[in-house]
Length: 322
Image 1 (cartoon, rainbow, N blue to C red):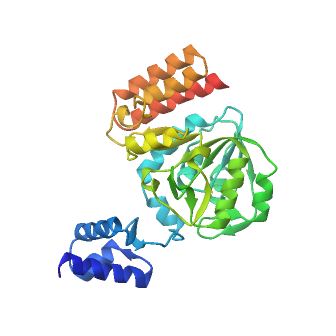
Image 2 (cartoon, rainbow, N blue to C red):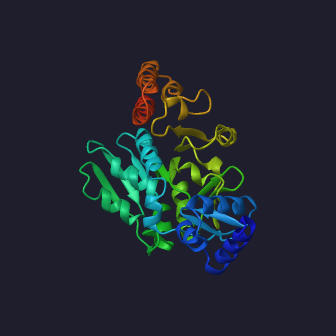
Image 3 (cartoon, helix red, strand yellow):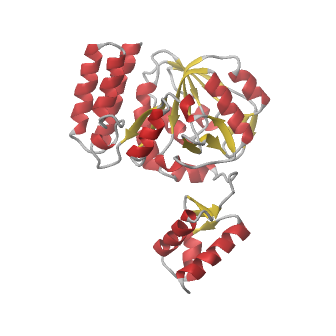
């Protein structure tokens, strides 16, 4: 079977079944998984399917939503590094809202035991992770719980977020781009995310780079509504610049084995400059120097050390703002 014939059959299977996966297609057509991935890439370029983790769905299925277990395993390393970098954005003795999302859940699990915060969430998995934290005063927002995401939605949740003001919201999205904004498959979840954004003074989006350019059924905000995007170094410099032109700061966290230069903002691109710039903007030269020193050390070390340098530098700036 020639490649165009195989791709036509893959497209038929995707339309009939709602999705296809690489392993099953490789077995059915007696080819390698890499061959199937090339077929799906070609179909995706043609706008006929949308690639998802492990396979593809027909184009136009903007309401497709993977289950929680699948999302937990997708881009796990990138999500861990994003969560570590996000620790620097936690306020000191402040109030945070934690949106339902697997990367935000990793942030919740990484909050140090010595931290003292008021935390608000409508996510059952995040609430379970924080329930025993000694320094966190936890508020669980109620409502109808969606089985696919374990998140509370509808009127109760919207009412609760309408009655609070928080220092920082850590929000998740299934897709983001300057043109299409922030999107998610479910209208009810989009409404709660929108209410949470309105309740926070500062909005921090935690999203791995695979979500850039993705579009889903329900839009809950513009990318310009976000103060800071923390993502991985898979986001291209061109995409980062396009996002920053609309006023959103971008922090690209370096991957394993990469130097800090891969993970910083587009203006200089180092973890050190990200931390130092944050501190300098607060007008505190000492904190800025600390951010530069700690981030600069990380710049000479690979992988997690670079992430730690970025966190340390941004943490110095956060203390300067307090």
